[in-house]
Length: 310
Image (cartoon, rainbow, N blue to C red; front, side):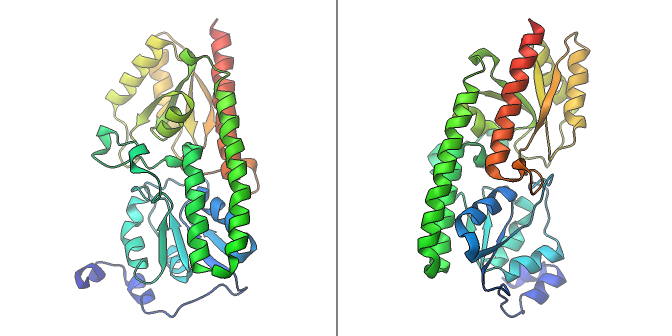
């Protein structure tokens, strides 16, 4: 333990000696790493919680490092919610030391490990992008409800009511995604994106998923990756590919150019939200709005571009 402390930044060592802080308005102070998790906490916690989300629009959680300000926010929290499954890999040390005095909860802890994907290229770890299967996010909602009630028993009834209402919305969302996916003929359900964030989406809703980068964005795709993906797209005449809000567009543009050099013109079908939601105040700034935007964009582009090719 002493050697681990010696490796921490000076500002974190200073905070380890700080007194507890609470939200000034009396609400339960909560920090969530990603916007998707913060959205659950806001829906379940209601007026009894004050939620801070660390990672805003366009932020890649695979590469995110906690700043001094983030550590202060974490230290003031009564509960810290994070995704787990190594999504927030560069925050692992900070979260580990927060757990010594603050409740930390991985919202994926209750997910049946038998249902998780563990691709060979991820070296024995699970794919962390579970929010793209809405049924997993229903499980995460229950984890948030249970742990909020444990820390704030007086709010248990409110948390249960809110969680039930939000779960109904998520069940309706799951049905909506299935209905929209069914509009695309099975042979056309091929989703090509910047990195492998959509494998749970593909399994749940019947899409083949092809990503340029691996599950983590920590390593960039090489020329061989671009050429291999371009060959597949040109051979199978995939009509559209998609950029992601948290990954530079140039990665997909390189694939598009390589496809064009093979005599086939694939289009960029639109921008998807993968590891981060949209701007606050927009429909895509909520989890439900983000998922609806994605499926509408995917279905619209695949159907439109397929018609143009016929």
